[in-house]
Length: 273
Image 1 (tube, rainbow, N blue to C red):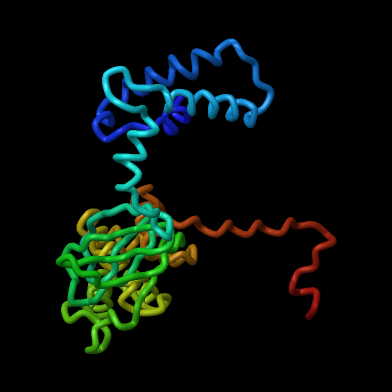
Image 2: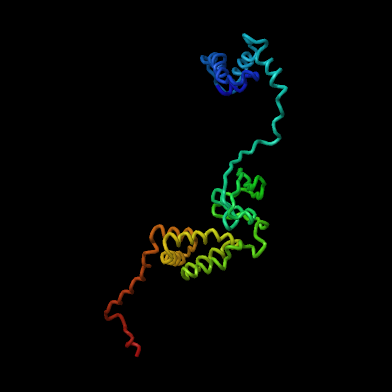
């Protein structure tokens, strides 16, 4: 029915009467085809086109002309060419810039100018690009990436002074970890050393700080030690260990070596004297 309606030509003063147009298509096209059998889509479209032309050329009852003549007189002169490119579907969201001057989109992190740290930006997201706007001005544009947990960083967005935000530095974060314990400090260092830029580890370190406030320093230190023992010193591993209570479990002791059975075929150390 909708395909039929798309071809019906409405004059400008009839456009609000869409429901009446649907009723016209039902009566003058669909009803006339209800008893016919079609064996292909092309055959059906040909029959619809014939009845559609008949409907558009049917004279108005109270107005001069027909739908075809009204379209040629009123609507066609107002038509404009279609855009040269297809409409790009975009979605928008607001995001707060973290201290690592990145914003999160679908699990991936994109950089914006570091001066926008702790401010809110508007993001325009398409299938191919991520754009950031501040005060209605575009401040960043990146190719869209589906890699969750990864970073896309424009070097020009990084601070000029030591490429670190003045409030947080790797040294300050490591010093905080050392106050918790050696294992926590090692996990903090791992965040800094396993990123293309140390600032990209700031988010994980701030997550460790939140875990310290939530679970306490002692449990965080135990969780960091356990994460190191399983060779996964990431924020996610530490958080999972705390959430499941594995930090409170004692490490499994190595099994005691069974005593060698004594019998005549086993020679002791005196045999070699």
